[in-house]
Image (cartoon, rainbow, N blue to C red; front, side):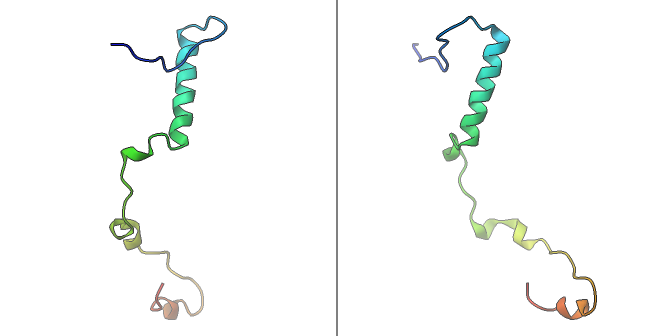
Length: 71
């Protein structure tokens, strides 16, 4: 089974710890840029449960009146 290497050292002789650190950084950058964006489907706004969470209550004069107003 022949596979292409993920990283190629052009100059120098890094040890195992340095290669592991470099691999972690490159993998982290690929993930941050959305390299694996297709793995998880996007959730619909209708299925988002955060809209069911109550917002903070109003304080001060007239707070009881504003509590009945739509958000």
